[in-house]
Image (cartoon, rainbow, N blue to C red; front, side, top):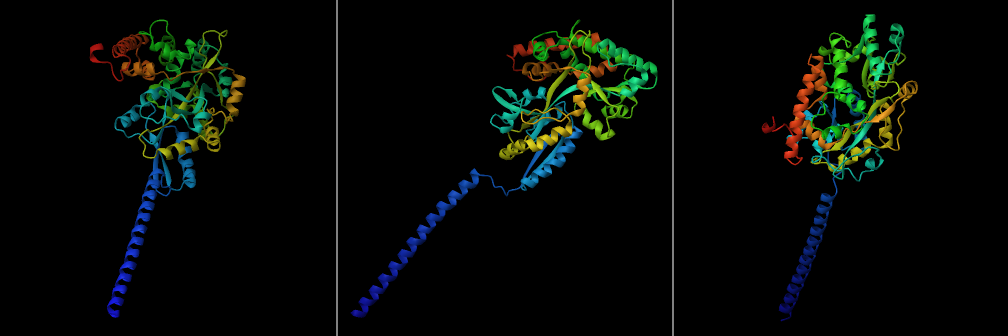
Length: 452
């Protein structure tokens, strides 16, 4: 009896121990599951900083910028070893290449935009409202209440020239448009130098004449907004006509040389850098490129293009913001793209960049060091003309009318009559305005066939 009772007690004890063990294992499993779920949720909320990340930074063919950022992004990878930023060259800054990428939903993670292109991409880029870089930028691009781009640079337009050539020929700095043409004629008559180098094979090189000229002559920083409300802005007596006539005279009289239409930007700058051309009209951004090729500026000076008819008028130089940095809204690495943009605009990095490019700072807490331009402006003073290139209605009409002011400059050099270009542009512009009005202001792209 005792033996049987002992066995029962032993069995009961074993079952009790097994039950406790099972309960303990179940409890442990519940605790582990809770910990696993918490760890999983945490890993979703926070990026894995050890996971390799690759981003593309799209920059158009600005040699100074491409060289600078290609080297600089390697420093970023030292700060964040898991992040690699590839500098991608955008083949053109006219916007056509990026439009194809936009249609294919294949924009770079970060990229440069021109002010006139911002309206096209406003739905495709990330709002930058709350960034530290935004609060420190003087010229954030705002559309529909959101900041969609931050300009890296601001610059003025200049006519660069060789003082030694001016002295040799016996000409002075031109103060008006008539004086400018006279200086070109006298340099040509001297028979030794190309008066002004223009790389007409690259249509964008006509921008100082055909993009900025009409606006500065009109003395209207909102010129684009104004002509967007006109049906025939290019007619007789317009500032467009004055700029186009000036450029046509330069072409007809071969004041940019007999081969201006067959050479591109690179060849034109080589003519100037080698002292074969007396002048070249380009932005402030050109100086650093010139220095990289020539290595000295002893025979280099600059003055504002004299967009005025009389010396009694104020002389202005077109000044604008450029290289607007934007973030692709569909990037897979939003946090890292924001972090990289903040790094680009950090005082240490940005100071190095702006001094290297010799452009003017767009940040309230970083000043540019620009000894060449300070001296040039001291000798040849001008008032900055703060050109407003961001007007959404103008961009819509321009796209619909297929208006390209720089292409018009190239056509003038190819022999087109100013009046023919004016008539065509006015016809297209009128149809574009009408078609956009019919569409309630929402039309993009070409003019509908019903308005052609």
